[in-house]
Amino acid sequence: MKILIATDKPFAPDAVKAIRQVFDNAGMETVLLEKYTEKSQLLDAVKDVQAIIIRSDIIDAEVLDAAKALKIVVRAGAGYDNVDLDAATAHKVVVMNTPGQNSNAVAELALGLMVYAVRNFFDGSSGSELLGKKLGIHAYGNVGRNVARIAKGFGMEIYAYDAFCPAEVIENDGVKALSSAEALYETCQFVSLHIPATDETKNSINHALLSKMPKKAVLINTARKEVINEAELVNLMEERTGFKYLTDIMPKNHEEMVAKFPNRYFSTPKKMGAQTAEANNNAGIAAAKQIVDFLVNGNTKFQVN
Ligand code: 3PG
Image (cartoon, rainbow, N blue to C red; front, top):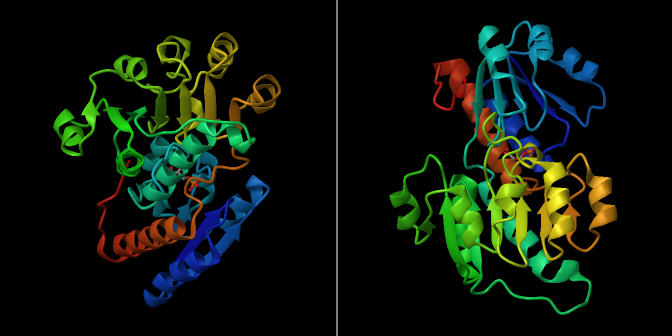
C-alpha cells in the first residue's frame, strides 16, 4: 500500500518522520509531496496511492478522478471545507478529519492576536489589558473550548454562542452561554471566531452583526476567511474608527485593508494557527493511525462524508 502526504504547507520535519514511522510499522510505503506549486504535481502524485494525508490542500473531483486507487483521504486538522465531500462519496472514497489534534495551537494564536491588538501591534504606544474584558467565543468546539481555558488565565469574562453545542456543556466550563450570535456580539468587546465555512456561515459575519459590538471592538479570526463579508467589514471599519480586525487567514482584499487600516488590521502571511511542531505531530500521527486502522481494520470512526 502506498500513502501520500500532500502538504502545500509542510509539517515540521519531526512530524513527517513520526508519520513515516507509523506507515513503516504497518508495512506501508510513504510518498511525500510538499510545497507543490502546480496542481499537476498533485494530480501526478495521487495516481497510484491508496490513501492521502492533507492539510488545507484542495481535493476536488479532478484530483479524485486522477486517484484511481484511492480509498481514503484524511485531513490532518479540523476543517474539511477543502475537500469535495460529494465527489469523494461518488468516488467511494472515505474522508476523515482529526478533530481536536491541533486545537490548542490555534487557540494559543487567537489569544496571541488579542494581546497584539490591545498592545497596538507592539508599536510602543500605551495599550490596554485583557483582564476583566468580555470575550465572546463564536462556536464552542475544540478550539473554542481551548480559547476559553486560556482566556480564563487572562481573567477575561467569557461568553459563548454555539448553534449546536448545548448550553449546559458551555456553562459547565464556567463560560456564559448566550442564545444567539447577535447577543454575543452585543455583549462582547472581543469576539473570537471558531465557526466552520459552510453554506450557512459563509459571509455571515457581516455589517449588521459586527455593528452590534461595543466600542473598541476586536474581532479575531483563526477560523476561515469565507465566513467574513469582506466588503461589509471594510464599510464597518470605515464607520467605526476604533474597530480592529486580526486574522490568521489572509482575506482577498488584504492590500485594501492594509492601505485603509494600517493600525487596526493585521493578517499573518500564511495561516499559521496549527503551524506548531506539537500540532503537526498530533494531527499528522492521528491521521496516519486513522489511515492504518481504516485500511487494516475498516475503522471509519472519524469519517465525515
Ligand atoms: C484546521 O482546520 O485544522 C486549521 O485551519 C489548520 O489548517 P492547516 O493544517 O492548513 O494549518
